[in-house]
Image 1 (spheres, rainbow, N blue to C red):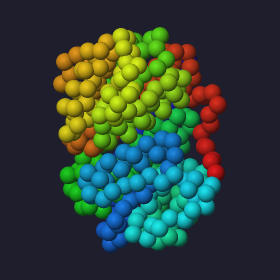
Image 2 (cartoon, rainbow, N blue to C red; image 1 turned 180 degrees about the vertical axis):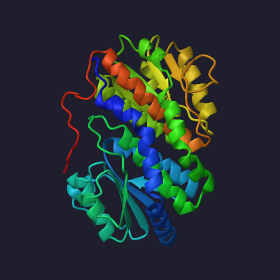
Image 3 (cartoon, rainbow, N blue to C red; image 1 turned 90 degrees about the horizontal axis):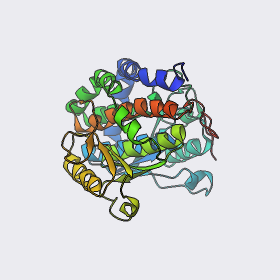
Length: 342
């Protein structure tokens, strides 16, 4: 392909989309954050599938680390298939869906609100069934996303959740880092991961590792490897890879570790170097590795937002990798943009 793909254009739109969301959403985020403080939930539940569920996993770590409130992901089929109402009167519920149309997501959001949960819809479609089912709608304002593989709506969903968290907890350090994200994400787009693309030539399987918020990013990256390149990628915590998965790591097996500048970085560096010692072709977004290959990364000044910047660099890499392998990342086989599950 010689023309710029929708996916590439949308990756390049990420900083602008984030800046627009932050500029236009301050008042609504402040109101939503105040409602969360008043509710003082004992637990947060998340409702999502696919990339949106990876955004939820990122927010799980961010909320638990920042607010000290446990977060649980609820399977939408609990309501849509099994018809089970949950006791969520002491909870807040965050549903994430770029389209806001999937019947099972909407059904669970409706059920959570009915049970007494304070409910939030994070969506790129403010006029949608999901928005109608929620107490607060957080409009991503990301603009149209035509690529089947979500990129800017994933990043915007995480930013929306982090901004809600910052206003809820009145965490100025986090809010300041979020305000500075557009510039950092522009730098992340420019990170050159072409060495990893070359190392993956001839390979159809790899591990993607992370810990904490970066584990959610690893899960999103593994999905994008499958969607855009047809590569079988599996995401694992760097703390769990020795519990069985290491069995298939040998000479020449590729490993990508997504390390943020946080408390987990030393442990994930140690594990990645260990896998490199077993013969793995190991790459890591850290300058601390001694055996693994270092990949460039953008620094955001905060351990949570640092993890988010990694996916922007990855998106640029995997779009190029898809084309390198002769695919059109905008048209992955068997997939469509909006998936409506029951």
